[in-house]
Length: 388
Image: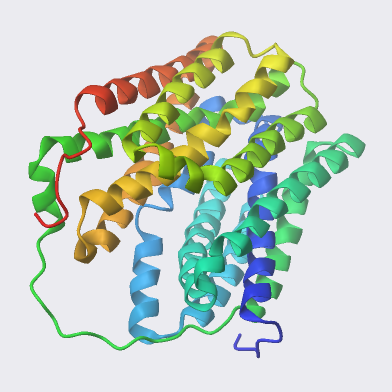
């Protein structure tokens, strides 16, 4: 799996991101409806889709540690890409819940492990140009989502797993282009303040509760938004268009968020993102049949994802010293995209049979509302100094 890098590191990374997030562009809008078309219950669909956020709870950290110790990050990305492909092939072997559960678990574990290794390689090789390279992932999402919508319109939902399989093949193929991992020299061991010591301050605890609640609120969105739209009469092309509208809004805000950060405090930006999330998920819960409103709410994804993520990273940088940044960022990923996202999706699955979009997204809106109140009244801009 070694292979000589034939492209510049920036181009090779852009190609990898394009195909990696192309897979997301098919799974996020269409894999849930595909599972429902097989006759799986809403709870079964929620469990299968929750494997994605659950896979972020541990494996990426372990693979990152392995890459640091061995200096074989590129080879680990290649191995993870191949194993994720094999896991998905196993999931397609039989349309049985447990076969799909085991296959998707393997696929998600290794697929999730590849991304943080690629992020580290990209940052090492391109530095400040990272954003210009990473945007190709969002472009891949848009291209794949719209293309898949057209294919589904021509055939039906049964083609979804084969589209995903083709993209996993492509990802495994382009992984040979990944730039080399550069092994850095280790510094002498020094005593570090335990990460747990920072959480003796309640505002820090509330900050991470906000991260958890925001990801919890997005759980129904990533698991059941497409299913709900389909049940309200939206076509695959319309569903794909709404997803892509959200991604385009996200891209636009990422380009401008640096200007906002210069004018407003990161905590104010965090509060803004939570308030928009409250409005967005309440509208999805109550008026899903209003296409124009769903389009407007998709523009809100720029705030509930891009603005929130930028503000969260800035606050972690502010409230934790340099020697705790890695652990703090890892905890942020685990609490939000891992634990929060999976629990939010599972609750939506348990509630779906009751009132569909209403019962799934009202708890999401409530979670965002609680997080907004915490951000307003329990967290202060000067909560802690990085020198503490």
